[in-house]
Image (cartoon, one colour):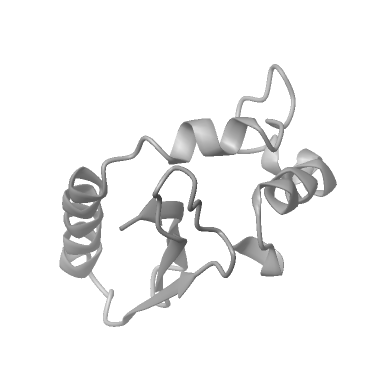
Length: 111
């Protein structure tokens, strides 16, 4: 995750520490979401639907003038599985276009 975070609490802490910067791009009328909010937002994401959106986004960058290289990185977050609910580990995917200085990240997807 961003800045070496390993879980939902790290996402909240990052948001709190970067609040002024994030506020330039996001409306945060209730402040930074709590660590309990992040899984409720990310876990329902359908991986197949996300993949389609991700592919369309990558294709739009590739078609843009000057976008030559897009680096893609994926990580599995150690210890993020939930045996009781039968859920596999959480995964992070990042894509970066060097030429466009553009980044897209999905914080969590489940296989």
